[in-house]
Image (cartoon, rainbow over all chains, first blue to last red; front, side):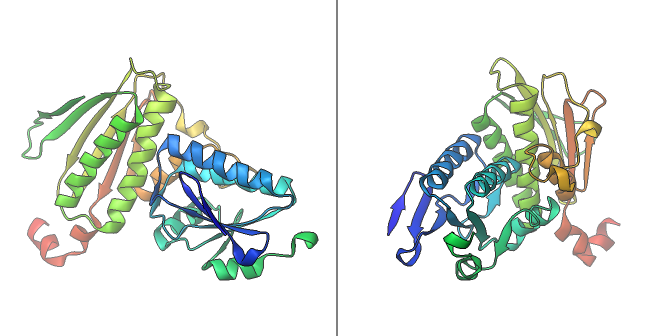
Length: 126
Length: 158
């Protein structure tokens, strides 16, 4: 099942409770867009009891520190709700941003959505 | 927006000076103009990625943190792009800040903080990042990676 918000494409994987999120924009830079993306992601997190969310960066070729800040906030919200967040499909240039900021230590990052999905614990065990 | 007022500083490579009121869309327009100039000088994709990232951080810092998005205040940008290097200075009309006082966002205890990453990214992706003593102007320099790697050009330009 797939739904769309102005900035995100949201898919429920294999009729499970795992939600895959893709960005529609190649650049997550504009402050107003980042704020809206943050609100849309927060709404997704708050809809689930123990959210299991994979954010795919397959379409993204630029981001900014403001976008990283939003991801950090979402990660905290997911943790607070006892959920799990995974990031996937990050291109090498953007991955370098995660390495420089050492956010690769904070986030669990996988090469593909499939690998991210396999890393998720069952919701009841998380 | 006042565009492309050329200031010659005794060299054949003019500086371009642009002033714009504190709004993100004007900042993005100027960013694009600088990136186009770099593209015309054959900067690599990697350099263009770095420049876009650092420019975004510098411009948004000036608009949001320096000028507090006050449209009455302006951001002053001067840039010069040559085949060897790009120099860009971004100045706001705020009171400035002390970059040395910004906590290191890569410290374990600061990883979840939302502050200081813009500065870190500028420093990581630019060849040099220099602030004026007041802390309201940053000058970014990026050497053209593909120019430096081309031995023929290294010989020709020493």
